[in-house]
Length: 302
Image (cartoon, rainbow, N blue to C red):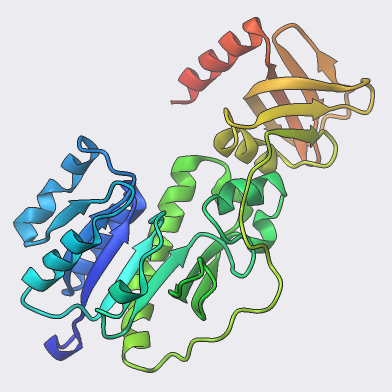
Protein backbone atom coordinates (compact mmCIF):
# COMPACT_ATOMS: atom_id res chain seq x y z
CA UNK A 1 0.00 0.00 0.00
CA UNK A 2 1.42 3.39 -1.00
CA UNK A 3 1.96 6.03 1.68
CA UNK A 4 -0.56 8.28 -0.05
CA UNK A 5 -3.22 5.60 0.49
CA UNK A 6 -2.56 5.18 4.21
CA UNK A 7 -5.19 6.57 6.55
CA UNK A 8 -5.24 8.03 10.03
CA UNK A 9 -8.11 6.86 12.25
CA UNK A 10 -9.56 7.56 15.65
CA UNK A 11 -10.76 4.30 17.18
CA UNK A 12 -13.57 4.14 19.76
CA UNK A 13 -14.04 0.66 21.22
CA UNK A 14 -14.62 -1.49 24.30
CA UNK A 15 -11.96 -3.09 26.50
CA UNK A 16 -12.32 -6.54 24.95
CA UNK A 17 -10.25 -8.49 22.44
CA UNK A 18 -12.21 -7.34 19.39
CA UNK A 19 -11.34 -3.68 20.00
CA UNK A 20 -7.69 -4.51 20.69
CA UNK A 21 -7.54 -6.64 17.55
CA UNK A 22 -9.04 -3.80 15.52
CA UNK A 23 -6.34 -1.36 16.67
CA UNK A 24 -3.50 -3.82 16.07
CA UNK A 25 -4.76 -4.86 12.62
CA UNK A 26 -5.10 -1.21 11.58
CA UNK A 27 -1.56 -0.39 12.69
CA UNK A 28 -0.11 -3.56 11.17
CA UNK A 29 -1.39 -2.51 7.74
CA UNK A 30 0.67 0.69 8.03
CA UNK A 31 -2.16 3.06 8.93
CA UNK A 32 -1.85 5.47 11.86
CA UNK A 33 -4.05 6.14 14.88
CA UNK A 34 -4.67 9.58 16.33
CA UNK A 35 -6.31 8.37 19.54
CA UNK A 36 -7.91 5.23 20.99
CA UNK A 37 -10.93 5.90 23.21
CA UNK A 38 -11.81 2.92 25.38
CA UNK A 39 -15.32 2.68 26.82
CA UNK A 40 -16.50 0.68 29.86
CA UNK A 41 -13.84 2.56 31.78
CA UNK A 42 -11.68 0.41 34.04
CA UNK A 43 -8.31 1.82 35.18
CA UNK A 44 -6.88 -1.68 35.62
CA UNK A 45 -8.20 -2.79 32.25
CA UNK A 46 -6.42 0.09 30.54
CA UNK A 47 -3.11 -1.61 31.36
CA UNK A 48 -3.77 -3.97 28.44
CA UNK A 49 -3.42 -1.02 26.09
CA UNK A 50 -0.16 0.38 27.45
CA UNK A 51 1.90 -1.37 24.76
CA UNK A 52 0.33 0.98 22.21
CA UNK A 53 2.27 3.88 23.72
CA UNK A 54 5.39 2.33 22.18
CA UNK A 55 3.70 2.75 18.79
CA UNK A 56 2.88 6.41 19.47
CA UNK A 57 -0.81 5.85 20.19
CA UNK A 58 -2.67 7.88 22.83
CA UNK A 59 -5.19 5.80 24.81
CA UNK A 60 -7.99 7.51 26.76
CA UNK A 61 -10.50 5.86 29.08
CA UNK A 62 -14.05 7.16 28.66
CA UNK A 63 -16.25 6.84 31.74
CA UNK A 64 -19.85 7.94 31.27
CA UNK A 65 -20.32 10.71 30.26
CA UNK A 66 -17.27 10.97 28.04
CA UNK A 67 -15.01 14.02 28.35
CA UNK A 68 -15.32 15.11 24.73
CA UNK A 69 -13.18 18.22 25.27
CA UNK A 70 -10.28 16.03 26.41
CA UNK A 71 -10.73 13.73 23.41
CA UNK A 72 -10.72 16.70 21.04
CA UNK A 73 -7.47 17.95 22.56
CA UNK A 74 -5.93 14.52 21.96
CA UNK A 75 -6.98 14.69 18.30
CA UNK A 76 -5.31 18.07 17.88
CA UNK A 77 -2.04 16.80 19.37
CA UNK A 78 -1.62 14.30 16.54
CA UNK A 79 0.41 15.57 13.62
CA UNK A 80 -2.20 14.56 11.04
CA UNK A 81 -5.90 15.28 10.84
CA UNK A 82 -7.75 11.97 11.30
CA UNK A 83 -9.43 10.69 8.15
CA UNK A 84 -12.02 8.36 9.67
CA UNK A 85 -13.49 7.39 13.02
CA UNK A 86 -13.83 3.63 13.59
CA UNK A 87 -16.11 2.30 16.31
CA UNK A 88 -16.86 -1.09 17.82
CA UNK A 89 -19.01 -1.69 20.92
CA UNK A 90 -18.62 1.88 22.17
CA UNK A 91 -21.79 2.34 24.20
CA UNK A 92 -21.96 6.15 24.23
CA UNK A 93 -23.40 8.22 21.40
CA UNK A 94 -20.58 9.95 19.57
CA UNK A 95 -21.68 13.56 18.92
CA UNK A 96 -21.95 15.05 15.46
CA UNK A 97 -19.12 17.53 16.00
CA UNK A 98 -16.77 14.62 16.74
CA UNK A 99 -17.72 12.85 13.51
CA UNK A 100 -17.23 16.10 11.59
CA UNK A 101 -13.62 16.27 12.79
CA UNK A 102 -12.91 13.33 10.46
CA UNK A 103 -12.76 13.77 6.67
CA UNK A 104 -14.83 10.66 5.96
CA UNK A 105 -16.98 10.69 9.08
CA UNK A 106 -17.42 7.60 11.22
CA UNK A 107 -17.85 3.89 10.52
CA UNK A 108 -19.29 1.50 13.10
CA UNK A 109 -18.96 -2.28 13.16
CA UNK A 110 -22.14 -3.84 14.53
CA UNK A 111 -22.42 -7.58 15.38
CA UNK A 112 -25.61 -8.38 13.47
CA UNK A 113 -26.87 -8.11 9.92
CA UNK A 114 -28.62 -4.75 10.01
CA UNK A 115 -31.34 -3.52 10.02
CA UNK A 116 -32.07 -6.47 12.30
CA UNK A 117 -31.05 -6.41 15.95
CA UNK A 118 -29.91 -2.87 16.41
CA UNK A 119 -28.85 -1.83 19.88
CA UNK A 120 -26.46 -2.89 22.61
CA UNK A 121 -27.24 -6.64 22.98
CA UNK A 122 -27.71 -8.04 19.47
CA UNK A 123 -26.00 -11.39 20.05
CA UNK A 124 -27.94 -12.19 23.23
CA UNK A 125 -31.22 -11.20 21.56
CA UNK A 126 -30.50 -13.25 18.42
CA UNK A 127 -29.70 -16.34 20.48
CA UNK A 128 -32.88 -15.95 22.51
CA UNK A 129 -34.88 -15.65 19.26
CA UNK A 130 -32.98 -18.54 17.59
CA UNK A 131 -32.11 -16.14 14.76
CA UNK A 132 -28.32 -16.45 14.41
CA UNK A 133 -28.72 -18.54 11.24
CA UNK A 134 -30.55 -15.63 9.62
CA UNK A 135 -29.11 -12.46 11.12
CA UNK A 136 -25.78 -13.49 12.67
CA UNK A 137 -22.79 -11.58 11.32
CA UNK A 138 -21.14 -8.16 11.30
CA UNK A 139 -22.25 -4.98 9.53
CA UNK A 140 -20.11 -1.96 8.71
CA UNK A 141 -22.21 1.19 8.42
CA UNK A 142 -21.86 4.95 8.29
CA UNK A 143 -22.38 6.52 11.71
CA UNK A 144 -25.27 8.95 12.25
CA UNK A 145 -26.99 10.38 15.30
CA UNK A 146 -29.27 7.32 15.42
CA UNK A 147 -27.71 4.14 16.77
CA UNK A 148 -26.98 1.54 14.05
CA UNK A 149 -29.17 3.28 11.47
CA UNK A 150 -26.65 4.64 8.95
CA UNK A 151 -26.10 3.50 5.38
CA UNK A 152 -24.47 0.09 4.98
CA UNK A 153 -20.96 -0.28 3.60
CA UNK A 154 -20.54 -4.07 3.89
CA UNK A 155 -21.96 -7.10 5.70
CA UNK A 156 -20.41 -10.50 6.43
CA UNK A 157 -22.60 -13.33 7.82
CA UNK A 158 -21.57 -15.82 10.52
CA UNK A 159 -22.61 -19.46 10.89
CA UNK A 160 -24.71 -20.46 13.94
CA UNK A 161 -21.88 -22.73 15.13
CA UNK A 162 -19.74 -19.63 15.74
CA UNK A 163 -22.03 -18.71 18.64
CA UNK A 164 -21.62 -21.87 20.72
CA UNK A 165 -18.96 -20.31 22.97
CA UNK A 166 -18.14 -16.70 23.83
CA UNK A 167 -14.47 -17.19 22.94
CA UNK A 168 -15.24 -18.65 19.53
CA UNK A 169 -17.73 -15.88 18.76
CA UNK A 170 -15.31 -13.11 19.76
CA UNK A 171 -12.53 -14.63 17.68
CA UNK A 172 -14.76 -14.76 14.59
CA UNK A 173 -16.21 -11.28 15.12
CA UNK A 174 -12.70 -9.94 15.71
CA UNK A 175 -11.41 -11.44 12.47
CA UNK A 176 -14.34 -9.99 10.51
CA UNK A 177 -13.98 -6.53 12.08
CA UNK A 178 -10.25 -6.50 11.32
CA UNK A 179 -10.96 -7.51 7.70
CA UNK A 180 -13.65 -4.85 7.26
CA UNK A 181 -11.42 -2.17 8.77
CA UNK A 182 -8.30 -2.96 6.76
CA UNK A 183 -9.86 -4.02 3.45
CA UNK A 184 -13.24 -2.32 3.12
CA UNK A 185 -12.77 1.00 4.96
CA UNK A 186 -9.88 2.16 2.70
CA UNK A 187 -12.01 1.39 -0.36
CA UNK A 188 -14.89 3.38 1.13
CA UNK A 189 -12.61 6.33 1.83
CA UNK A 190 -11.25 6.11 -1.71
CA UNK A 191 -14.80 6.38 -3.07
CA UNK A 192 -14.94 2.93 -4.68
CA UNK A 193 -17.75 1.67 -2.41
CA UNK A 194 -21.14 3.33 -2.49
CA UNK A 195 -23.07 2.94 0.81
CA UNK A 196 -26.62 1.65 0.53
CA UNK A 197 -29.61 2.65 2.62
CA UNK A 198 -30.68 0.07 5.18
CA UNK A 199 -33.83 -1.84 4.30
CA UNK A 200 -36.99 -0.91 6.14
CA UNK A 201 -38.06 -2.97 9.12
CA UNK A 202 -35.81 -4.68 11.60
CA UNK A 203 -35.73 -4.03 15.32
CA UNK A 204 -34.83 -0.67 16.82
CA UNK A 205 -33.23 -2.22 19.89
CA UNK A 206 -31.94 -5.56 21.13
CA UNK A 207 -32.96 -6.95 24.51
CA UNK A 208 -32.69 -10.41 26.01
CA UNK A 209 -35.52 -11.93 28.11
CA UNK A 210 -35.44 -12.50 31.85
CA UNK A 211 -36.72 -16.06 31.33
CA UNK A 212 -36.32 -18.29 28.27
CA UNK A 213 -37.84 -21.73 27.67
CA UNK A 214 -35.86 -24.26 25.62
CA UNK A 215 -38.30 -26.54 23.81
CA UNK A 216 -36.60 -29.93 23.79
CA UNK A 217 -37.51 -31.20 20.33
CA UNK A 218 -37.21 -27.79 18.59
CA UNK A 219 -33.87 -26.39 19.76
CA UNK A 220 -30.63 -27.72 18.24
CA UNK A 221 -27.49 -28.64 20.17
CA UNK A 222 -25.73 -25.48 18.97
CA UNK A 223 -28.69 -23.30 19.97
CA UNK A 224 -28.85 -24.81 23.46
CA UNK A 225 -25.09 -24.44 23.95
CA UNK A 226 -25.22 -20.81 22.76
CA UNK A 227 -28.04 -20.05 25.19
CA UNK A 228 -25.96 -21.24 28.14
CA UNK A 229 -22.82 -19.49 26.86
CA UNK A 230 -24.38 -16.05 26.34
CA UNK A 231 -27.62 -15.76 28.34
CA UNK A 232 -26.72 -17.16 31.75
CA UNK A 233 -26.81 -15.87 34.46
CA UNK A 234 -28.90 -12.81 33.48
CA UNK A 235 -31.57 -14.99 31.84
CA UNK A 236 -33.23 -17.88 33.66
CA UNK A 237 -33.28 -20.91 31.37
CA UNK A 238 -35.98 -23.57 31.59
CA UNK A 239 -36.54 -26.70 29.52
CA UNK A 240 -39.93 -27.89 28.29
CA UNK A 241 -40.54 -31.62 27.78
CA UNK A 242 -43.53 -33.10 25.98
CA UNK A 243 -43.79 -35.82 28.63
CA UNK A 244 -43.56 -33.48 31.63
CA UNK A 245 -46.02 -30.92 32.93
CA UNK A 246 -44.61 -27.42 33.30
CA UNK A 247 -40.97 -26.50 32.76
CA UNK A 248 -37.76 -27.44 34.57
CA UNK A 249 -35.16 -24.78 35.51
CA UNK A 250 -31.71 -25.68 34.19
CA UNK A 251 -28.32 -24.27 35.18
CA UNK A 252 -25.70 -25.42 32.66
CA UNK A 253 -24.96 -27.81 29.81
CA UNK A 254 -23.39 -30.99 31.14
CA UNK A 255 -22.54 -32.79 27.89
CA UNK A 256 -23.81 -33.28 24.33
CA UNK A 257 -23.86 -36.17 21.89
CA UNK A 258 -24.52 -35.99 18.16
CA UNK A 259 -27.59 -37.77 16.91
CA UNK A 260 -30.91 -38.26 18.78
CA UNK A 261 -31.12 -41.56 20.65
CA UNK A 262 -34.88 -42.01 20.49
CA UNK A 263 -34.96 -42.62 24.24
CA UNK A 264 -37.45 -40.72 26.44
CA UNK A 265 -36.21 -37.86 28.64
CA UNK A 266 -34.70 -38.81 31.99
CA UNK A 267 -35.17 -36.40 34.89
CA UNK A 268 -32.65 -36.97 37.68
CA UNK A 269 -31.59 -35.10 40.78
CA UNK A 270 -28.53 -33.59 39.06
CA UNK A 271 -29.50 -33.41 35.41
CA UNK A 272 -32.14 -33.74 32.72
CA UNK A 273 -31.17 -35.95 29.75
CA UNK A 274 -33.20 -35.45 26.59
CA UNK A 275 -33.23 -35.60 22.81
CA UNK A 276 -33.21 -32.15 21.22
CA UNK A 277 -33.73 -31.44 17.50
CA UNK A 278 -30.43 -32.94 16.36
CA UNK A 279 -28.86 -34.78 19.28
CA UNK A 280 -28.90 -35.96 22.88
CA UNK A 281 -28.01 -33.44 25.57
CA UNK A 282 -27.64 -33.50 29.36
CA UNK A 283 -28.53 -30.29 31.21
CA UNK A 284 -27.67 -29.65 34.87
CA UNK A 285 -30.74 -28.78 36.91
CA UNK A 286 -31.00 -25.41 38.64
CA UNK A 287 -30.94 -26.82 42.17
CA UNK A 288 -28.07 -27.14 44.64
CA UNK A 289 -26.76 -30.52 43.37
CA UNK A 290 -27.22 -29.48 39.75
CA UNK A 291 -25.30 -26.22 40.20
CA UNK A 292 -22.38 -28.14 41.75
CA UNK A 293 -22.46 -30.59 38.84
CA UNK A 294 -22.53 -27.65 36.41
CA UNK A 295 -19.42 -26.11 37.93
CA UNK A 296 -17.60 -29.46 37.74
CA UNK A 297 -18.62 -29.84 34.08
CA UNK A 298 -17.34 -26.32 33.39
CA UNK A 299 -13.96 -27.06 34.98
CA UNK A 300 -13.60 -30.22 32.89
CA UNK A 301 -14.23 -28.30 29.68
CA UNK A 302 -11.44 -25.80 30.38
